[in-house]
Image (cartoon, rainbow, N blue to C red; front, side):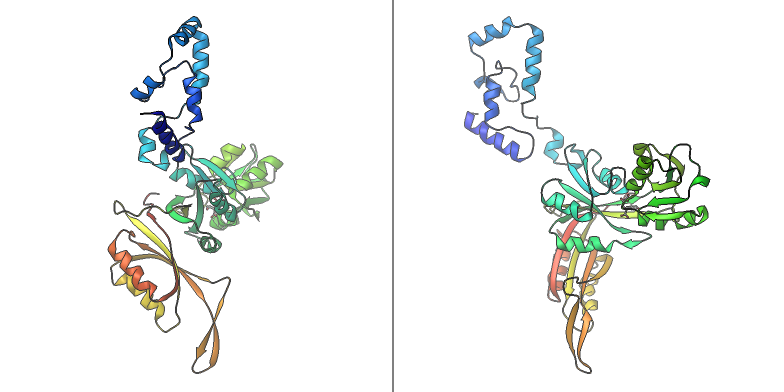
Length: 381
Ligand SMILES: O=C(O)C(=O)C[C@]1(C(=O)O)C=C[C@@H](O)C=C1
């Protein structure tokens, strides 16, 4: 392999994000006593040190050589490993996942469930998690979309449409809601409890018995951090056991949620869609608006039923930018109806001909149709 082909390989590797391998690093390598460029036989040959260089090297003491070698090795390209070749982002310690909230919140738990080795990127607002991915500050975003007690998180449905990210996965998380307080504080001393509104609503029975005032804050970990930083002796926080450890709080009570199984479903978003396959259970999420007419929603849903495609979820949202549609009503003149967006999740991969033909037929009934993503279903809890 000559210098040129190596440079090409170098470019490819750096494009794959596997660490710098630009042509200038060869200058550095070749000047490094021709040391162990052992990742390819022919490469090693072209960097063999000259005789004079070998003599200089042998005059150095072992300590200096190893010190210099250490420094030089940091400039070497990283080896291509099985995990890089399998391109499994789950094993990638460099993958950056954006979520709304502070470290220790449940959205971060969801990110860690999907990508256990990830670097988490906390964001102030949901909108920022989208922007972080769009601006390449993060590789993916994890976003709560529905809760088994509270239902759909509507504004996140709206955000899916305002941005062009693709759904590439989902995470189901059973949150263990805990009551936290400063060390030494007992339940009876608490006058107020701070948390995210969903966590407060999910622990309603427990909080009613406690008889405290509830204060709604941005996220559960934010509540824990606030109690800890302000040294609040009369306030508790509802957050995770992980948040307790991170912010130095004690756990006064665990599993305080009204429903033992309080599940939040999160979506994983990325700049590029995944290529749908048939290797496991896939789900497809779409959004559309329909033409006007009687039975039109019935007809739209029938395209799935006729192909034995199971519908998992249907959600409707008013079109925020153009909420009403003016329609000619033969009896009453002109009428103004709310115009709806329908979000549907169905159980099929876009690699299946039946899913493709269903969407083809659906398109005839819609004024707008977008596939938000096709992704593997999370079947674990
Ligand atoms: O505040 C957090 O910890 C979050 O991750 C957010 C969120 C939510 O948005 O529903 C996630 C799950 C919990 O049940 C409560 C709150």
